[in-house]
Image 1 (cartoon, rainbow, N blue to C red):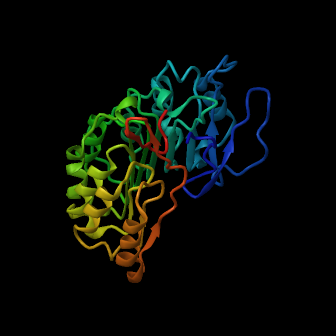
Image 2 (image 1 turned 135 degrees about the vertical axis):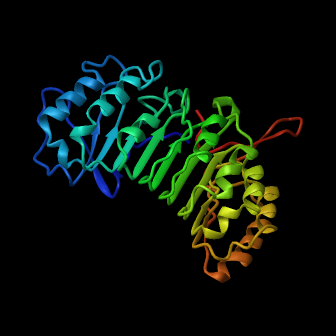
Image 3 (image 1 turned 90 degrees about the horizontal axis):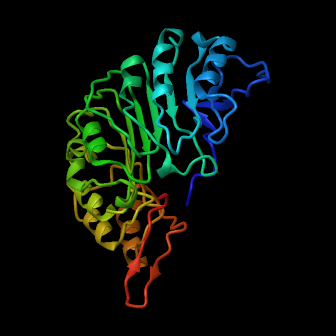
Length: 318
């Protein structure tokens, strides 16, 4: 599976694309939409920073609550350093900004694992009242440990999440964070982490308000499930998401053999490689307690070589 649709909403607001040069935006109240600012990845007639300058000159940015950074020119070769510099330089013009998504690109613009990224933490330093940050793309991504008192949602979507980013998130003091969503990916696309790298996140020590934890799209989903089975943070969760990865009976059995999960509102396992007997065990264990379980196998199909080798895939790779 690849990403074929742009974000349709952010921070509870419908997405609205700021028009290209020569076009006027339709009349819209600045605080009623999530504004998407983009440039063309190929043969851009206007740079992203140029489009952003035009946006700032056209829209009352003091009322903008959510901003989506779409494609920047040559994202497959160029990281968004100039984008981040433009945003941080304009921070005084965005006093109401509460949500920011960096890299809303679909496959025709740039495949997720070809999106170049950089250190995104200057955005959090520049916007101390930001409540939601999303990032797409893991190549070159950095997230050194930090402190941020307002962030409630952090989403990092990748085909391969560097281990140092996982450790950076785990080492951050995020007392308000309620929703953490990490796409761990595969080694082929830079996902060089191990389950041990999740230790600080799974301890929950720096995440006292975490209620929704997603560790998904992982080739090592069995090891992740086994680590989650005894993780202290699970007791305070409402939603646990281990979807989109290579979860087999081994991982699901480890999860069921760990601490009780009957307090959850939802366990999401969609895109899995579980046998029907194991699925039935999950149902019998959790559904009578009122836990909603996502079982959709989706496009999780196995391939077998002539020598008996079985190949399984994450939902989003390249």
